[in-house]
Amino acid sequence: MSTIEFNIPYGSEQVQAVLPAGTLLGTLDVTDTPGLSDRKQAILEAIQNPIGLGKNIFQIVSPGETVAIVVPDSFRTTRIEQVLPVLIDGLIEAGISERDISFVYATGTHRGPTPTEEKKILGGDIYERFKNQTFAHDPRDESKLVYVGTTSRGTKVHLNKRVHEADRIIATGAVVLHYFGGYGGGRKSIVPGVASITSIASNHSMNLHPTEDEIDPAVRIGGLEGNPVAEDMLEAAQLSHVDYIVNTVLNRNSDIAAVFAGELEAAHLEATKLAYEQFATDITEQADIVIAASPSTQNFVQTHKALFNAYQAVKPDGRIILLAPCPEGLGGDQFAKWLKLGSREAIIAGLRKESEINGQTALSTIQKAPITYMVTEMTDDEVLMMRGRSTESLEDAIAKAFKDLAVDGRRSPTVYLMPSAAYTVPFLR
Image (tube, rainbow, N blue to C red; front, side, top):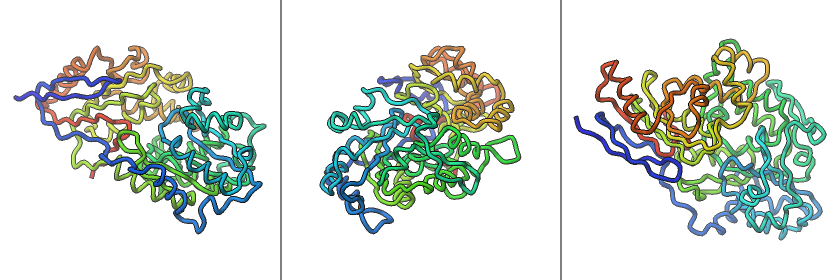
């Protein structure tokens, strides 16, 4: 049997390893799309030519109006810092005063950004000009929330008061495939981005099947239509008055591949088409082994996306080898709390009482981690808490995975490599 040599990222380095046997079915990766050649001009043209609206934002605003710009938090790369100077210049040229512009970080249930992170999100110049007009959303601070209505599915929607009560709302973000919201960007900037903890919980509870103890199959990655979570998010966001969105789609190097601006739903839908082309990859068969890397995610909550994506490419009785340093460990006490419930049934019972994003991630993790060997800086106890398998190294993980499969007579297993597993989404066709 011939051996297969390969390289795969771990942190900032490339790790070399050898498979003792097997068939490499392919490398599943993000499509190579070029970045914008004349970035500033392309951003301006996108903002000036809205999708789904007759006027652009510079024509919509009037002097004296207040503008709330919803921006991402520190947990995702969006390159909005490259968009904001163009957007701000246009607003000021249209007669909006600098003092009437505020920025609200769409934290959802995450922590607010540190000053260093704020500077990275907004860009140095915008941060220095507006640092006294930036606000981190707090989903638990009722004094800063306002009730805007109830969706047809029963979500009582409370939103950030500063956002909802501004004369104009502009929502920004990046569009990627999301494991239960369908896609990021668009509506997600508002719900969960600037929604209350109870509104987020109500929306996320729609992950679960209404009668069976399982994830609702209609809740799916890359799917908006018919997805109860995604449809409820849109309806909730529409209870406010989002005047404009500006969304990026990034390429594999995290450069802007395209900008989509305009109406909340229409512009987002156009962006999802490019995001699908960029990040989705069709496969005709699942592999015995998937070797997946998430080199830059800081903790396991962020790395879960990579595990989710790798799981889509592996046979149910196969093995995943997940390389993810996770220097910050699991990613918080809330996630650990859900993992400690111990079983799928217990987590589902807990989610029926109080839905929470960390619980959804824990449920997904304990389904997928039992077939996963972790190459990580996390402790053995943390890996065990997720129901994963500890390893000493990539070589150790490969040896263990091959040994497991040999028991079933699979001595020459099929293999996929996923060097950007957090962003690459396989679909079995």
